[in-house]
Every structure is written in C-alpha cells, then in structure tokens.
View (cartoon, rainbow, N blue to C red):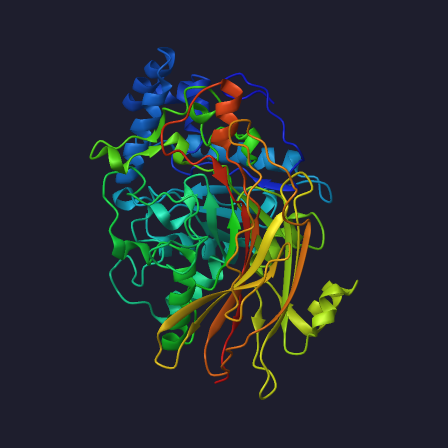
Length: 546
C-alpha cells in the first residue's frame, strides 16, 4: 500500500486478523473532510474544518476535534453521518472477512477521556453485519463512564443474541484512572460492578506505541526488565503531571494484584484479565517491526524529521510532552484459536487464551496443572497433555491434592524473521497471610550456559550483538527455542495467586537506530537506540478453596 506521506509499505508477513476500530465520536469525520462531503456544510464547525482542509491545514481540525472530545462535546451532531459511516464500517469488514484465511472483525473505539485521562476502549463484536447493524457505536458523547458503555453492550447482547466485549487501552496515560478502585461516582466497587467488568473486559492492552503498561520500576524495583518503553510523565494531552501514587492504578501487574485483594473482599475479581498488544495506529498501517515502523499517525511516518517531532506537545510543561522518538514500535495480539474465524478468535479472547508481544511474532504457550513432570515439556503431545491435565493461559487452576504445588510447562519459539530468545520468566503475584499483595519473578529457562541461582534468578545478562551505527545484530547469542518446567517452591493453598509468563528476546536495534542509519542522521542525546522485545501471556489464576 501507499502511506499517507507517499511511501510504499508492505508487511513482512500478513496478519491473521484485524479490527479497524475508528473513534466512535463523529465516526468517519476525517474521511468526510477528505472527501469534502456536503453533510459537513450543515454545521458551523464543519464548514470551518473544511476550510482547514482546503488550505492544507487539516491537522488543525484534528486538534480541535480532540479538544471537543476531551470535553465530551459533539461538534457535528449529525446522526445521519453516524449511521452512514457505521454501515460502511460493517460493509468493509464483511467484504474482507474470509473465514479460514483472514478475519476482519467489526468494531469501533470508545474514546472516553475525562480530564484528558485516557480511558479509551476498543469494542469488538463476535457477530456479522446482520446483528451489528441493529445498533450504532456508543460514543463518549453519549457517556464517558465505562459502566454506561458496559450497559450498552449488555443491551446489544439482549437485543440481538450476539456477543461483544471491550478492550481497555494502555493505562499509562490515564493518570491513575484505568484501574482505580472506585466507580465514576466515587463509590467503592461492589460485587455487581466486579462481575460486569470481568464479563465485558476479558483482556487488556498492555503494550502499544504510546507506552508499555505491564510494569513500572517504581512499582517493581526488583524487576530489571520493568523499565521498558515507558511513557509516564503526564496524561494523554500533557496537561496534568504524573504523581507516584497514580502509577499503582495504571499498570497491569499492579492491577492484577489489586484484583486479588478485591476478590478476597468481594468474592469476585474485577481485574481478572488477559493481556494483548495493539498497534493503535491512526494511519491505517498496522506496522510493528523496528526496521519497518511507519509510526502511529501520518506525521510520525518515516522521515529524517521525526527525530525532532512531537506526538503530543504540552502547553503546560515541555517535560510532559510525548516526542515521536518516545513512542515504540508495538504491539501485537496473539491468540490460541482452533481456526481463523471470527467465532474461534473471539472465543479465544473471551477465555483469555491470548498473549501480547511488543511487535515480534514469537510464540509462547503455557499450561499449569498439579501432576506435570519435568520430562513432559518435551513430549510431542505437549499441548494435548496440557489441556487434558491442566489449564492454559487465561485459565483457572482449581485447588489440587493436599500437599501438592502447581506445576508449569512452558514453550517459546522465536519469531522466524526475528531475534533469538534470552529467557523465560514466570511472574507470580499473591496475597500473603496478612492480605498484602506480593510479587516475585522467577527465571525458569535461560539461553547459553548461564546459571539460575537458588533464588530463581539468572544474574548474568545475555549480552548484545547490536551494532547501533549500522543498525544490525546477529543471532550468535540466545537460542531459537526455550522450554521450561517449573514447580512453585513457595505455594500456599490458602492464598489467592496469579502466574503469567514473560519471554525476553536478545537486544536488537530500535527503530530509531534504523532511522539514523537509513537517513544518515544523528538522534537527540539520550534517545533509546536498542530494544529488547518480549511477550506477556495472560495469567493463570489460583483461587483458594472456600
């Protein structure tokens, strides 16, 4: 395809599925402006934005639209446009959906941003057009309260017999709102709230260009891999500075731990979610490879000038701005599905048998059970045994035999067009005897002849082969395949817990290094030039017996 700036683009390998989730607020507005559609002449703001486009200053319309959206004000107020565009969205998805070959979901983005704090959700339907066209997208102009969105989704299911869920965006720009422990009305969660959130939000996006939201060094100081592609200075518009207390309700690992505490209090876990990545691109190009990253939006497409550009330029304090070079080439959602169809892939999301990658196509699979043996991780029927005697990522491990501890089998395979693997880790979170949340990281497999110490950690780094100047690396270190068997050495049957797998690749050149080489430029001082891509699986939860 040809990009917004006229550059040719092609994926190295095709995607299996996609959802084009346009913003529900004035959905299709930019296409209407680009086509100079007469419907926009019916409003004053529409005529003003058309003048911007005619003058070649369409970006002004985008910024003004964002300002209206942040205030929850509909500048166009055209139900006709909403209906017409939604019909086109449905038609596009139906046209390109090829069961068994390529899956095109019908969906949209609900763009709630109270106070410019990012609470965006992607809404994804399991169904085809015959059901989905019975409703129109629910927008933040209707309400910016997630509970109202979930009620709308509930009404859709009741009306049509269909299925739908919402996927929260990365929480790192929400200024503490994404995983807060109270409702919009300021009330503490109750059981009904927890059940509804768990029902409609089966997975959470933990990595995308605007930052990775798995963990943060201030929350996990013993995690040397937590400092990864962080954007943590402010909110979505750079207007309100980040404070340390906000971080705890922005990052997925902390939210999973908060969920355990809420489960102990309510009997239901509101933050029982799987983890995926997304491109969140606004230029219709789902690129994630470092050497082929076309940015999040047209003005972040490859050029010698994006080293100096700003995705968000704060009017309050330059330190709160998001530079183009701050953004990462991320991410992808991976599913373990029985076939490439809407139903099978959507069902994999619903049961949380999904994982996130920060852009590469590495594969990872994990099963937990009570009687797996170390040699079984190498069995050719590894997956069959995992399903028959255990649970996969996203599942619930029920209480086992007295005196037993959970056992895990993990396999990881590198991206065939990418980097070797450094290590496999299992991250455990639990509630201790006093009801306090804890976490611990275990290295369960490492490449080379490195040693895993008695405390479960491999202290020696894998090393690096990256040549930043030439934007190259080799697979002389690391391995193509890693497998692991692990038994929890500190399991207590009376404590709620979760376990998820993180797979770390060897270092490779970051997209900024490829830009510097390709365009013959120098990057600003302090620019990250090396990246260690990784995958995060959905957790497996252990819930104590009542």
